[in-house]
Length: 355
Ligand SMILES: Nc1ncnc2c1ncn2[C@@H]1O[C@H](COP(=O)(O)OP(=O)(O)OP(=O)(O)O)[C@@H](O)[C@H]1O
Ligand SMILES: [Mg+2]
Image 1 (cartoon, rainbow, N blue to C red):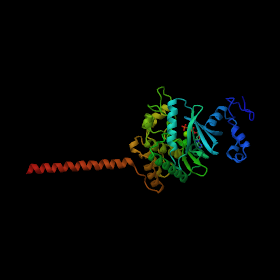
Image 2 (cartoon, rainbow, N blue to C red):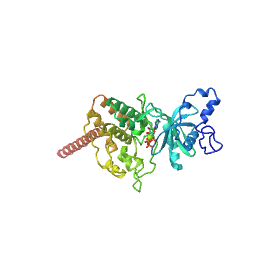
Image 3 (cartoon, rainbow, N blue to C red):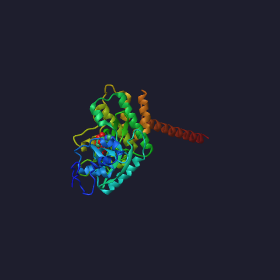
Image 4 (cartoon, rainbow, N blue to C red):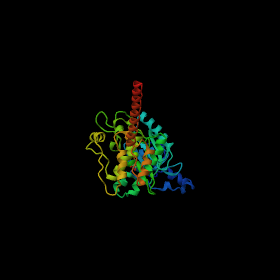
């Protein structure tokens, strides 16, 4: 069976052609014929299966935007709303993973912030989980960093948008868990948008390295505690991801590299990151990144709000705060209290003996 209009091979005889049906619907209806989104050209390389999947999600595909560890992302049009969307279709077919993805997608859909890509819908199409979200016309940080056109003012603006998104998400008890350059989009108008928030990719406990030594996902931007066990990923793991992403912006590479995943993880777990002086990058910003990239989560900024507050200091030319310094001051204060109480007890004891 093939479509009489575009000759696309159709998987089922009783289905409308996923490539043509919005147009044929538009031809039949004068009002709908004025629609703009349907008029955009469709990428010819899209397979019938992909078009069919999108059809099940109420979308018409335009082009493939990329393929990550979790699934494929497409630029599409949501037919009911006639609006541009990005459609993410998951590779996973196991029911446990599917269920979790749908739950996390629903939790993400409850978030509403100018620096977070809005999730519109989640569901199943041809037994594959999908997520429908706001389409951001622009570039990911991966592309922006590669173009080497980033200036300090723009970098600080991106960092601020990202920290605002994290502060909001953490206040709502949502952790990103996979913060990296490809998950940060910058629109043509310069708006910063965090994507894939709260969608867990690594469901299994025991770290990013499987028993056979193969790796689940890329750990270049992953906090050490999360690399050991994904269940450890709390807000401070996102602060690490933020630090690693900004490190990439400054130095053109992530804080750790390796010939293979095992070497990379070992380095991230054991070695301190290197911060060579970099022309045009203020010392205060480097200090902030040093705090973000500490191995122990308790020595980093605890969450997005604390990170944002420290970033505001950097933008204002001040020294960023340092949680570990505050901790040691607190620890010292505690010691003074203990010493004071002991001295008092000694004095009382001496006075009793003297009497
Ligand atoms: N809402 C969106 N609007 C526009 N482009 C998007 C959107 N979501 C994702 N993209 C683009 O699609 C590409 C693929 O995204 P995807 O999330 O599948 O890959 P990834 O981020 O590299 O891997 P991962 O699966 O680990 O998140 C990204 O590089 C990004 O630029
Ligand atoms: Mg992604």
